[in-house]
Image (cartoon, rainbow, N blue to C red; front, side):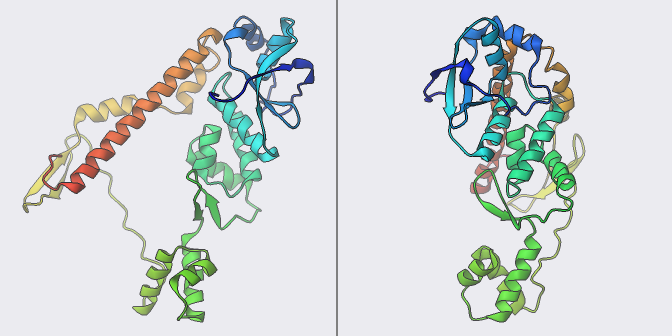
Length: 305
């Protein structure tokens, strides 16, 4: 929360009720926090209502040791923004949300902002996009779905590209002389999509492209894949055995770390959380290095793989 102003807030002014937890308080967690109150970050409070967005256990710990005030930063936003911030912060640090609590929180976000993409909700709730998709399907069986969803990058993307292309085709048949941009605005599509649909219709083809052929999985270990080199030769690529083994050993999902959440000593929680983020940064750096290598290969065909 660097850059945010910290206030000393009277504890008696604070209200609860925003926590995404099933059990709002854990007496053992409160007792442990009471021993390290001066080392924990400020709580987060909704400025308009003085409700605690993040830090209920810290408030209870401060009250238990007789403190009248507690450091806090203020959050301004509507009820939907407050809900999302409460989930995001409780996932990030402190006493992590259980899997069932994160799933319940994700369902609330789906109900509040159904236009958000699965990936965007997953990033807030600490779940995988596949889990969010499953929760969305279960929670919205009888609810009409938005035609587009807002991704993490702020861009709207259609939930059914085929439906978008059909709308474009109908608009083109009604007004074949209209510009691509005009049709794009009318159908809620990109000019590139309109251009492609127009060309397909002019060739007498369907507005829907043929389904992409399924991509075979890249063989691992000694299984190889042949590719053409710029000089016309055939070359075999092999995924190293030691990499495949190393990569599989470092796979992590909710079932792996969930059993440790309540067993880490409270005095070490933030240390472990920081280490987890550091390891996540290392994985992102690895991914970026791989992508950089691929881009360099495309720019220089003679570069060594």
